[in-house]
Length: 307
Ligand code: GLU
Image 1: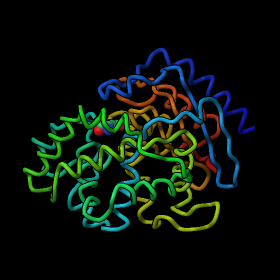
Image 2: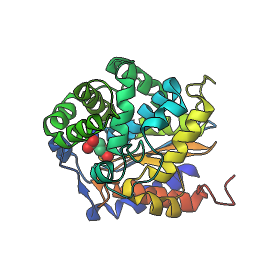
Image 3: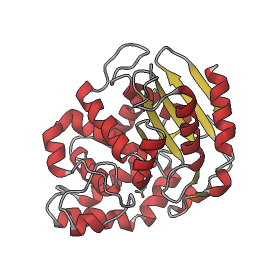
Image 4: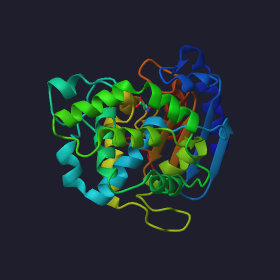
């Protein structure tokens, strides 16, 4: 039944692909095949539903912001993190510098680049990339995640805007430590190679309150997960977050590599892959598949039929 609905969601989402385009501002991302589409659901009761291109590896990009935020909250605590970054939707593009320069010293939220770079600056003195990679593997239930060297070097070579954000944060006294080391760690985290299955695994860990349902091990504190899910709902889909919350109502985070990770409270994690993006930077096929699933399975957070 779930398999059939997922298959229908895939066919539905496929129709929208021609309206999107692959991101190419990081040159290596431009090589993705826009026609690929994959959908994976991991349910709390152990079902693993997969359709389409679920094995295709791509880079996690902005979805790593969820992992960095969870890690920072876990080790620095709520007050320290939110002394440096706010919790408000910005309504601007993910890489915007405008409000940071004009309206506030603190980035608006941890899901935009400025906020994520600030959050990563808190991790830089404490963790090596290898430690964070290992943590990502555990949270995503995927031991095969590695650094995609080609995308990492491509982003590093062209990432002047992110370096500019880091320097601006430094000039305002919000970012401590070495700004270039921080941006380097941020680029590496964005370049983790995942697939739709890894994102479903991460979604399930979060949907299950931070506990791995396979073995009952607590990976994240419940209060950390609550903050992360709230920010995914309000800020996770770039400046399309409001409309996505109304139409789909699943806390989710997207990345310009074409992935979307969603979590349905207490029920399932969802991973989608489709590198053709809409004008806001969200996977167009992924977004439409999630809307279809939300409608058919009553997954909206405020759906009264939500089990
Ligand atoms: N590495 C990308 C950047 O910083 C992430 C963007 C994204 O996925 O939103 O530009």
